[in-house]
Figure 1 (cartoon, rainbow, N blue to C red):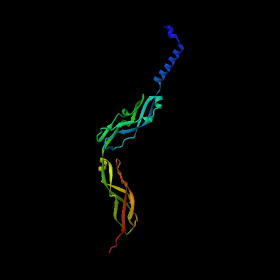
Figure 2 (cartoon, rainbow, N blue to C red; figure 1 turned 120 degrees about the vertical axis):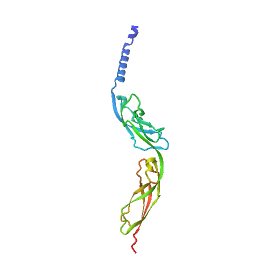
Figure 3 (tube, rainbow, N blue to C red; figure 1 turned 30 degrees about the vertical axis):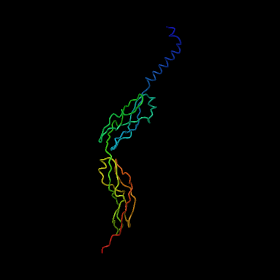
Figure 4 (spheres, rainbow, N blue to C red; figure 1 turned 30 degrees about the horizontal axis):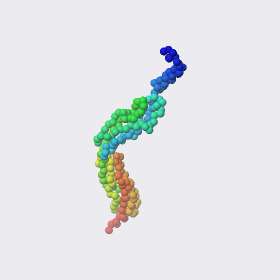
Length: 218
């Protein structure tokens, strides 16, 4: 028995030394904490609804783990995924975002900022809005604006229900008619202030400002 234990003792001692070194490396490697900006991804948006509030696109995450593995962490593979499936219209607070982080290996999340998000879902609706012109200045002396014609007279907007409901018209960009002596025709962009809705197709309209001499008193 003793003979078998002492056979190739040099190789066995070398193996023991390597095993001790490996054990020390695995159990005694220095821990490290690093901060990352991780993308926030929303998936499974309910049909016919949209997000109608500001949500951060990136979440600040502080991660701790073995130095070597943490230094080699591939950021492009890390994302916080929020599943919106089954949510109803209204405001929903989603907490514990660290549980939605697809973090591989022996890592631990020590801090998130923000640690939760509020998601406001609204139904998507559409509506026709009247187009109104914005004029700046006055025609030249003894001239007047006889008519203002806009084509098209209406445009379609689409977006969050509460926002669309608050609009009945949309204004054009300002058209300057200071000192004008003749009719002006211009293609003008629309100044739509919506944040969670937008004009569907017609982003530019044609405005005709009919300017004629002021009739002289008889």
